[in-house]
Length: 108
Length: 116
Image 1 (cartoon, one colour):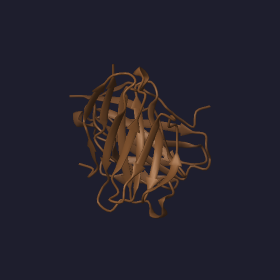
Image 2 (image 1 turned 120 degrees about the vertical axis):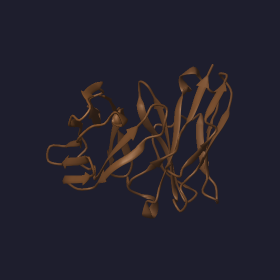
Image 3 (image 1 turned 60 degrees about the horizontal axis):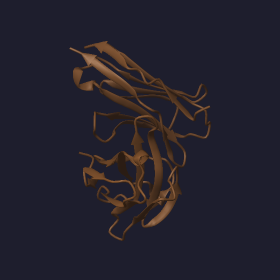
Image 4 (image 1 turned 135 degrees about the vertical axis):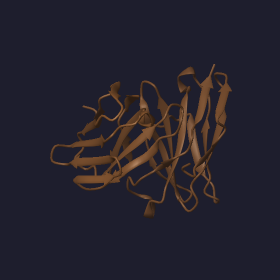
């Protein structure tokens, strides 16, 4: 079993939709959880960072961590075409392990 | 702009050759991480340096090596290059206190390596 599993998509939604992106993990020692956004041929950009279970909100983005289920989510409200990118979950304790990314397309 | 810089942006070379990739971390960050990203493997952690010392190793091949200099910039050396080494190589930096822990990392724009 891989340490981090992420559905690669691709995911295509209309503008204004609510997007839900998810990752599961197997290592209960993971303490830090992050979401990165990566545009084509660019470096990953940190979107959200948390180290506890629960919700964290930043503008249109909400990150959820459920340590008991080993499951993390990223919700994007009122999605925009500019949100079209690959979203990577990342988590770890001493070092980060990344999911393979979900490619999202938001259609105008 | 994350504040992390990487040079060169693109590198094309032949099998068997050696290349050096360079990274400058964000101002004040002591930790530097190197990652390899390929289509089939995703983002793979290679190695971490903290204030000049190696701190953690990931899936780094013996043909690859890295170092961090007193001014905190880092170099990743790739030798005896193979076709399969073609990938995007990213550097990230972090303000991780004490060098440990998977804190938030800020990525550079990457170096695209093509081995022909």
